[in-house]
Image 1: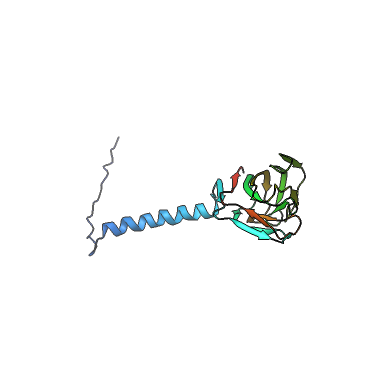
Image 2: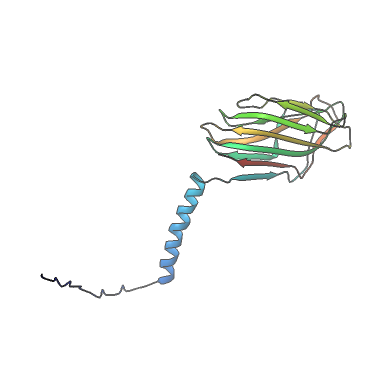
Length: 194
């Protein structure tokens, strides 16, 4: 039986002329940061998105729904979101209030339900079905000038192959010179399920 002797050759390399250990560490972190950022931007998107209405918005004599300047959120393609909108609004009993949502091309809003404290002390509407591009415009009672009403809307958003924005739009249901106001403090929350 023969035994082989392993020979290990060690060779000391000449050190580089300028060694900057801190720069080498920073370079390695930059690679990690760039990779992590790339993953966040393409593969991992936020699980919960919360948009807050930071200022009051007022309109008058306008029955054409327009995008709220604060309550819009970017959504990714091929995802499912559980959505909730909470808003405080004031509108006269003549003007009332209407709202809808816009979604990316090919997306669907499913099982939209809302509750509002209208002039009858509470209104609830269940809307099954789906829509693409623009949600069904929903009319809601106004409580009268100076009366703040809460509006809660729940639905499921299913996006197709296109990313884009989920945007809440609103207006007076009947154009009237009195102000219709959506107050600050409202929230649009999206929880990504898939």
